[in-house]
Each structure stands twice: as structure tokens, then as C-alpha cells.
Image (cartoon, rainbow, N blue to C red; front, side):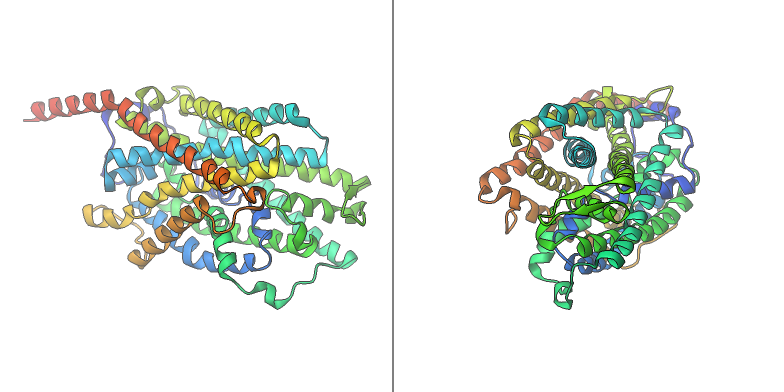
Length: 498
């Protein structure tokens, strides 16, 4: 571990509850579950074949530099809390504290927003209509199952993202194979070479979703002190999970484009609709109006795939929560938030208080959004996904530049891995996330679900962002007693040493 110890004495007492639970293979599967988000595959496919081209381009100009950046920071400063620690070392505790609240709150927004609605929509598509009350019940059950999974000790809880990684491999692999079978039996949608030509409009529409698909490399570093040999584990896991996630995205996106007519692909239902249509090769039919009916083996496989998709989106939320909640607990214990939330369970070594608060916030998001949209799932999904991405990416505007700042401020810190082309790496990653935030808050073309409703869409993004930032400053104010106590302890230690 690096000799740099930037956290307060209050955290040093909490860290005694941590246990080494993450091995190299665990971190690899954890990252794979984090990176491969099943909730955004349809959004990429909805923009046509050029989505695949932009996916490759952004793999080079964002995914690879981002991997370099987080590998250097994660191996140079292997301290529990990851991004919070890096940002604090670079820009100070206030900036890091507000930044961390943005990073943390994106998770309950995601769980109560897009992930819950994907799970509910999948259930309704393959099983039975729930109605508005049923959506409330199912969505809340989804959220609190996730809370329980995150609250478990990491020795047990790590199996949730591992199971999620396997679910992704099986589900997406089976879908891709079934597309081949479907193509031989029914033919595919014609795709011309011109469809793959990248355009500016496609770039603006796709960059937010594609970059969101590619983020998550920093999450294992939030649990660095629960990892065996992090300075070797982090680079190993990032390399292998990065390659695997790129492949797992490409096949299903191409499959959706080959099966579902471009005019019928929606951000929310793209993958779900394509999966249902493809499974008709095992039993079922597609009516002239596009209605899909599964029968026999097709219906059975549809139910299995639906369960796999629900598990997949649940484990996405859990894997992000495992990291984001830990980083928030570290920040609170360090004086950048209320000390109450900085406590770890002595039994499980997990930030249960942050977990429960996140579950409550996600529940509020779910209920509020369903009320505001009247149960309009597509509208809810569009606004929720945009807000989650912008909230997360605003936090990256400080986290990414911290690599260059720390090279200057702490040049002697051991760096087992040094990112090549450091300035270019920082400019590319920070510039692309900044661009993403701008086009999400004020898109050139409104999402179809908000057609003609510019004010409503803008308020759905700006108001929650301002509230989250205000919470960040409030948390910092509530951390004043911890900071004062830490200063007093440091003065006493200095006086005793003298």
C-alpha cells in the first residue's frame, strides 16, 4: 500500500472492521458486472448501425484512456474510498466531499429509476401486466432486495455481482446465438453500408449512453483495503473485464439491429422486444402488426431469459452500490459528511447506514417518478437515465484530472503503473464526459418521449442536479464536528511528539 494516508483518525477506527475478501478473479467478475449494463443496450441500438461504429471509436478514445487513468490512480493510492481519496488529495476535502455525494446519489437515482423500470417492464412483457399499483410493489421489492444484498458482508455480497457477470455471459451469449438461428430461419433486416457511416447527430445522441456503458473501472478501488494485492489485482481485472465487456456489448447490439425494424426500436424496450422476437424460433409467431406471441419451448425460454435480465439489472445496481456506498462512508468518516453515515457494521464490515439511506432515496425516486409520469415507462426511463449519467459524469470532472494534479503534487508516491500520454488521456476522458453533461442537460433534439416539452425535460435534469449538489454542501457542513475533532487529535499528537 502507498504510504500516503490522507484520511482522518476517525476512519482509522472504522477500517478495523474491513476484511480481505476480494481475489483477482472476484474483482474481474465484479468489473464485468459493473461495465456491462443491460439497461442501455436498447438505447444504443435505437440509433441504428452507426452505434456499433461509435462504440469502436469510443473504445479507443475513451475506454482505453479511462482504463489507463484509473489503473494508475488505483495502484498508486490503494486506499479504501478510491475516487474520494484521489479527489481529496488533488483538490481538497470540500471539493472531494461534494463530488462524492454526486457519485453516491447517482446510485439510488439509478436503482429507483431506470433499473427498477427495466425490471418491471421485463416482468410485464414476459409474465403479466402489473398495473400502476403493481409497478409500485414490484419496483420497491426490486430496490430493497438490492439493499439487502449490499448490506451483506463482502465475503458473501461479492457473489451477487459474480452471479450477475455469469448471467450476462449466458443471457447475451444465448441471445446472440439465437439471432444466428433466427437469421437462418426468417432472414434479417437489411443493413446497408451507408447505415454504418458515423454522423454528428449520431455522435451527439450516442456519446452519453456509450460512455456510460464504458464507466466503472474505479469501483473496485473503493474497496481496495478489502482486496488481496490490489496493485496487481487492479490492472489484471481492468484489462480482462474491459475486453470481455466490449465483446458482450457488440454482439447483442448487432443482433437487435438485425431482428427488430429500426423504426420500432425504443431505448427501453429495444433489447426486450428483440429477445422476445428471436425466441419465436423455439416456439411462437410474429403477427403482421408486429405482435409477438411465444408458445411451448419459446415461452419457457422467454421466462428464463426474462428472469436473467431482471437479475442482470439488479446486479448492476448492487455492484455500483457496493463501491459507491463504501466511498460515501469513507467520506463521512473523514469529515466530509455526517459521522453517523461513516460507521461500518462491526459484524459485516459494510456501510449499512448508507445502504439503508440509499434504499429510502431510491424508493422516493421510484414513487415520485411514477406519479409525475403517470406510469409512462418510456418517459420515466428517458429522464431517469439522462439524470443518472449526468450526475455520475459531473463527479468525473474532478476525479479524472486528479491523476495529473497528483503527479505534480505527489511525484514521489510509488506508481506501479504509469498511464501513457497522461495529458492526452486526461483531456480525452475529461472532455468527453464534460461534453456528455452538456448534451444531456440541453440536447439538440429532445428525446421522443419529451417531444415538444423542452421545459419539462430541462427541469427533470436541472432541479435534481441542484438538489444533489446542495446535499453535498449540507453533508460537508454536517461533517464539521469530525473535522474539528481530527484537528484536535493531530495537535495533541504533534505536541506529544515535540
